[in-house]
Image (cartoon, rainbow, N blue to C red):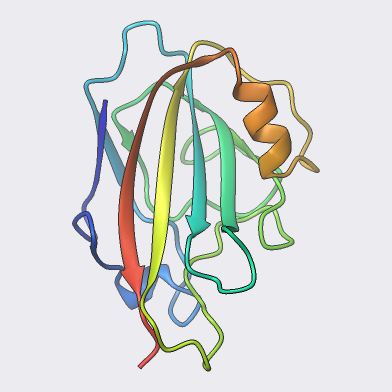
Length: 155
């Protein structure tokens, strides 16, 4: 399985539109070579370069029905129905995509990794779930994993 993004290439800079300094909308993700037994997808977005934490979680979403395109601009809320159905947990304190927005004093480029998981089932989690809860619930259900890394740097 592979994942690409129409807004940025792997290891390239994320456009302002998808950051907390812009519109803060989730990017469109394109998934190819999806395993046949896939029922749903889950996505985790982590900032790997926050100096005081190993990884800083910006987004968790799961129960996205099998597809090849996860649309741009998924809305906020624990449960979403349009443009796709899905559940979002707590990342960065909210049930919503939160794009790059490092503090102004962090000048080094940060790596933001979108991990996409193909799952063989739906997950039973509440909107209060965090990354740890999602990782635990996915344990026996991951068919494939892919990632794309975007960069962001304060100037």
